[in-house]
Length: 98
Image (cartoon, rainbow, N blue to C red; front, side, top):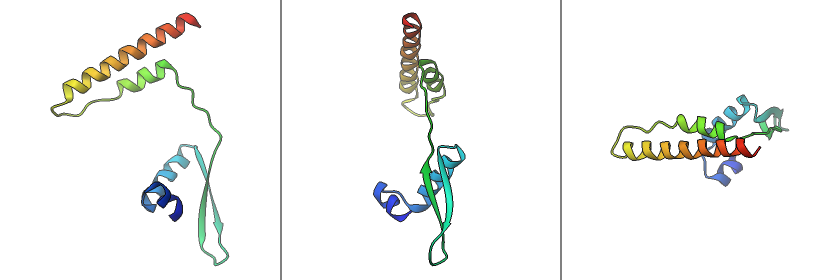
């Protein structure tokens, strides 16, 4: 775990937390093995998966982006609305051509 953490510039506990979440989501599988000196080691491997993004899913995800309070709230809200509008237009266009 030390070398992968160093490779990506992340502390080991944080990397392990993310790997546990990925394991819970079914995106990686962890197995426990004993080393020669008797220490338990957990190895992670990526599990096969596929993600299909559609304009509808992207539009739905864009709706969940809620800007926090602050001086840029109005600008952020406008940007999110513009992105959502473009995604919705893309979705309509894809429906027409498919």
